[in-house]
Image 1 (cartoon, rainbow, N blue to C red):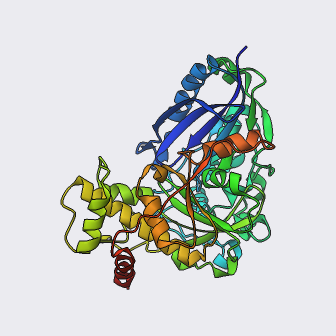
Image 2: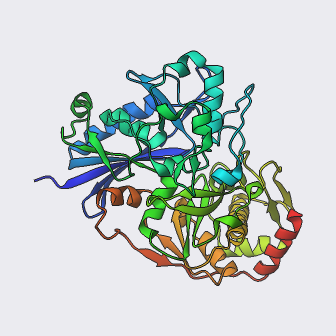
Image 3: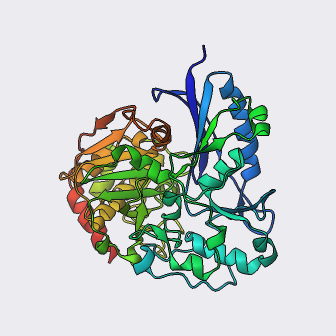
Length: 446
């Protein structure tokens, strides 16, 4: 008899993953591919057709290994699909695309706690630009679907809205009232927003043609889905204090118990909405992207002696090395002091930079309590130890879920089960002069 399992469709900004997970939370199989941005068509857009073909083919392989009872979509935020009954009316806009030639009168930060961001990182700006630039196509829109819910709709045919995806710097959501912001009504979008559903809700079963194409059971349920950083928060919900650091292309710190009135728009601080419909104080920067810029195309892990050498010689990387988001958006990154001499020194400098940026964000948030690190930076042997040395008041642990989102997707299906996996306490590593190095870095910020 085949084991019962579910599939988590995890679409991050850089990569997409499909994970086949059994009822106990064990990953049976996992497949990845790049999340491509295409330059053809009217603007830079996501390769939804490529992802769809990959999804169908991968599901056929998974169907031979387990009986799949559910699919859970988990995706990055700030993205939406405009659909009618036949499918997309316009390609899914890439949130890093420039949006020239349209005025945007977004709601106030006081209303949405969604900072004004560049390019299309505010979803409201994307929608306003599409409405102004492509009025005929926009006029055919039946539903505005945030990205996890687009994949759910494509799989089962049921349209839904969901709070974690609406509540991540979209300008569409008021986190204090947990309702749509004034922008939605003012722009005439209210009737395009499907009914709200919880992230864990089973919207329906697979469309018959998709069940046939994937070899999955006809009664396979499709869950509403969730924003990826909020998937990483699921196992920690209920804490009165503590911090979760979701790492990947974006480094997003979520501080339970931190007051919303301490958030500052100019520092790219925001309130996300968690899966329980509660606002959470957050701050972020594009850490994975910046690490790649500093470490190079082929990151080469280093030893502690390399980190000690850079600290001793005062080599500093100063923000920022990505074009979008973060407390220092708009500044040009630079290196002060002797430049890194080889690949290992570049890796060390990239690690030190991300540690110092994270530490800065945690201080700005007033983050307290245990600090849990989720996602790709758990594979970095020095990130957690250095961060722990700078923050002795916050014991650091690494999750054994290298994506941070896989467990969250599984928990949406098995809500009463204990989260699978373990966390590993990280021992601090404090090279001589690390505290002074941080002081020089912060002083150089001006």
